[in-house]
Amino acid sequence: MKLAVVVQRYGAEIAGGAEYLCRLIAEQLAGRHEVDVLTTCARDDSTWKNRYPEGDDRIRGVTVRRFANERTRDPASFDEYSRWIHRHDHSADDEAEWLKQQGPWCPGLQSYLEEHHRDYDALVFFDCLYASTVLGLRIDPARSILVPVATDGPAMRLNLYREVFSRPAGIAYTTAVERGFLKRRFPIGARVEETVGCGVDLPPSRLHEKPPSEASASPLTARGAVFRRRHRLYGPFALHDGRIEAGRGCEELLDYFNGHAESDGDTSLVLMGLKLMPIPNARHLRFAGMLSEAERSEALEAATVVVAPSPTESLSLLALESFAVGTPVLANARSDVLVDHCQRSNAGLYYGSRDEFQACLRLLVRDDDLRSALGRQGRAYVRANYRWEVVLGKYDRLFAGLPSSRPAGRSPRGGRRRRPRAG
Image 1 (tube, rainbow, N blue to C red):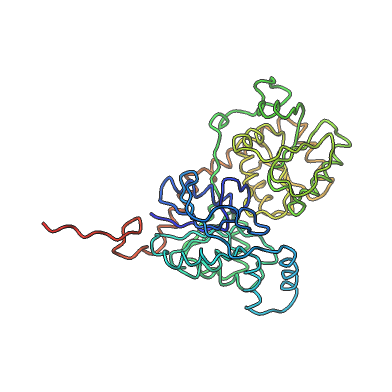
Image 2: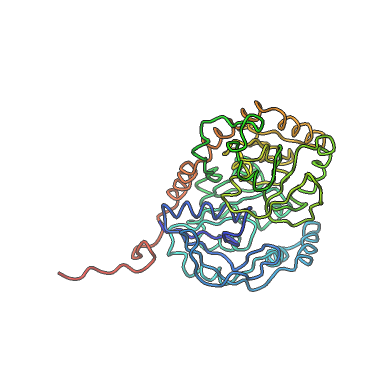
């Protein structure tokens, strides 16, 4: 099959969120199908400024077609308009203006889809929030699959999203929690649906072994020994990876951890990812920055516990990747998705207050047997639900449920079939 995967931004440098999820899935689908990613030239989602060159690119086996945004976003003006629209009666035109101001606004991408949508067997739209999906779904809804990556925020109360969820022939939900809230909120019109999630690689060497404790392992064989030596981490540490910003629970995390450090000075907190807020200069805090995928995996394995502080998650690849390497998770109880992962896997704890955070962290740091049991259960959960062959099989079922794709007379790659020459 030939697939068009539509997403608001795309690149190996973009870590986290719907875009990271999209890239992982596009790369895996490219092993079975011909995949074109259709996206904008933006690298950051605060202004949508064109950073990548317009035109075609090739990233890890995937063809990427980039289109320039017509305008950038003014965050202050957009925030002010958002506050107004969420608090006042407004019209459909007001919501259309909100969508345009939110960005990215990319008429070139829309025009390409209108002209070439019949060249593809299926159109896969990632992230229900943005104009690339809202407008793109209107073009060929009968052969479109939506991957909503939705959280229950104020934007989901706008009327324009009722249309979004009524249009696509297929929906690939990230979690059962997301599926439940969307079905309660919107009249879903899809003919085929799957709760898909995302595949996670299980390290072969860790599939069946019991994770050794820091106390019992030698410095050369301990889990994540390379990462620990590189960053001079000699005791237990909690790890967070992702966008380091207040809105994702990181300000609260620092506050709660500071209280823990006052009574337990042996444990450190390591922060990886993109820093979007100040990090205090304290002995128990480390900032590791943006790391390669190999280093990220080492870090997750080296950690005593991984903390997932965000109250709004659609899937939490951080939690799944931690489970995959046998590291337990300490999650924010305000996130229904994270709580559901912890309960289904029995591989993590969750906190709803400062006292609960500190009690759970203390327990996980001190109890080697508990961490080992949680680690085994986490790996079993990923094996059963998030192996790539499981996830890709669900996508193939979605594709099979769509109507027969391109019109007769087109080749599998979108060109015209040649008539056979006469005898």
